[in-house]
Structure formats: structure tokens, C-alpha cells
Amino acid sequence: TLAMIYQFVARRVGLSVDIIGLPGHIVIHVPTLRRYVDVFVGDGDLLTALDVERIVHQFGVLPMNDSFLQPLIPEQILSRVLNNLENAFLHQNADMDSKQYSMVTTMRDILQQPVETQLQGCRRFINLTWAEDHFSNRGDNWKEW
Image (cartoon, rainbow, N blue to C red; front, side, top):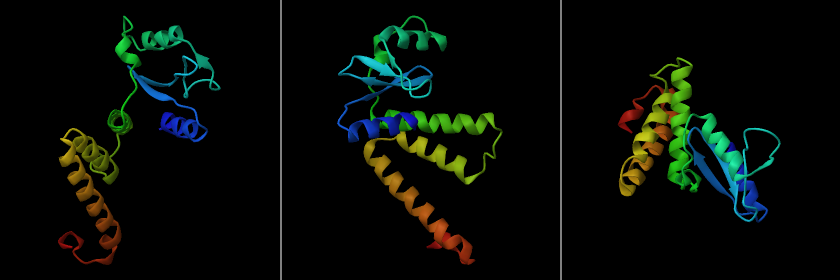
């Protein structure tokens, strides 16, 4: 999410940047500078391609592959965010029956469907979440709504 905020702010000031999904890590690519930014480490220092290769090696991936440097599309970014959230739940021994965990896994499952099914699933999910939030505390049977 930090990379998405960085991309949003950069675009607002007229700078084109891409989110690059390395194995195990995300960096920002600034094409006009031919440099990268690791938004999670340091103070926004510009990185070279060699620096990015070092990051990849730190995650145990050898050799570097040029496909790692391809910009992520929005669906890939969301998929990585959802996977990270699910992993956070698993590592914290969180309640797997919780509404938050269910939301993460449902959205991840929806993303794996064809686009039209994704849209229908998202609409249904949003409507159910809204209904639960607005009617569950009334005592009536909100699911019949």
C-alpha cells in the first residue's frame, strides 16, 4: 500500500512511476530517471538496476530475471496486497473465522475469476458487507434483506 501511495503522489505532481513486483518485495520504477526507489527502506534514495538485483538476491532468487522488472497491473498489485494480508493473519495466529480474514480470502478468490465474474462478486460482496453493517445490530434477520 505504501508503494501505491507513492505512485499516487508522484502522479499528482506529474511524475510517471511504475510499481515493480520483485520476488518478495516491491519497488518503484522512475522511467524518466532510469532509477528505482525502495519506498520501504531509507529516505527515498534512488537505486540502480544493480541495487535492485541485490534486493532480488536478498530474497534468495538467483539469477536475476528481466521479467521481474515489468510493471504490475492493478489486479496484480491488489493480489499481492491480499496475499500479504492473509500471510499476516497466518503469522499472527489470528482468528481465521473473523470478518477481516473472510474479507481478504473472499476478495482474493474473486480476483482469480474472469473479469465479469469479478465485477459481480465485488458487487455482491459490497452489498452484503453494507447490509451486515447496517442491519446486524437491529436484531432483525438482515440476511433475508
